[in-house]
Length: 238
Image (cartoon, rainbow, N blue to C red; front, side, top):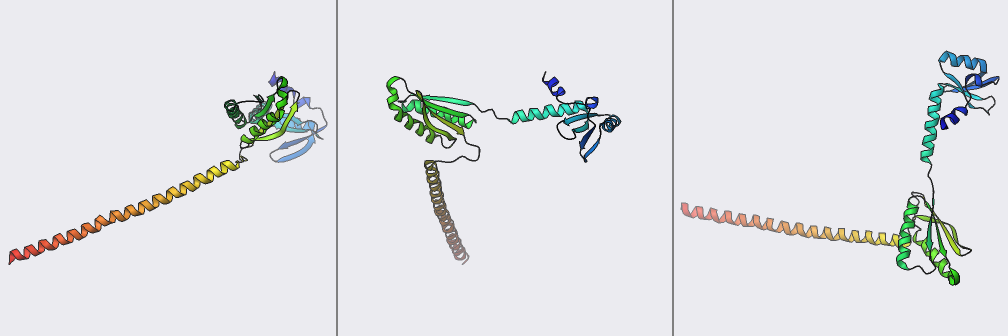
């Protein structure tokens, strides 16, 4: 069915009944009478394919129609593959969600955003819990702040009936913004690495000095032993 729709999308050869057409190709374009364009197609053993019927005059190509359809299907397939399907994932809270449940849902929301999906978080107020709407707003604002590295706020918390909604969208790759706490942690870790490198350097220098001391002592000892042996040899000869 899809192939039939694609075929019916274009007019070819004698189906093209306008007076003249514009032929486009690798060498440019030219306007010729449709009859001449059909003769050119026959001589080259290809088809006259109308690719832009609304142009004035209509734009056509001299190409094998089967090859043309194959190229179009391939192009559509590539475009479809490049399209990113964005889903909206829901995260539900209560106005008095405990810390363990909060961290569990925070983890899932981060995964959703990293996969390129949007997140709709909301606090559901059941019965008299609507009195805690300020508490729900604080919860959603904390949620947005904890996800600032991977998501951006599309709309601030707003109350709609018994639900307060917060909408988050994924941040694009390369635009990830670190929180101040994350930057402080990285700076402290880098400073610690520098200190460790400095200590290793000092220890290495001290070890090199210690290694040289036995070497020098050994040379002096060897020189002393050689002198004593030579002295004994002379006494023996005398």
